[in-house]
Length: 71
Image (tube, rainbow, N blue to C red):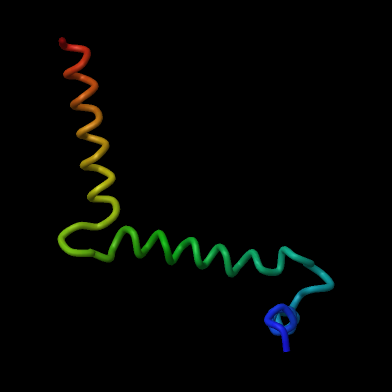
């Protein structure tokens, strides 16, 4: 059996095809996005989270921009 046939069969198992069509998958993507956000905020890899790195880089860029204006 081809992989595409297996995928089609798996997608048919998700309820709401007649009423919602393709949008029946929207809750899965919503939950996936929330899980990714939680992971980025709370899970530390090494010493930092994603947002620690983001805040540090943003403050470095602001500092560099101030130094360029001050010159």
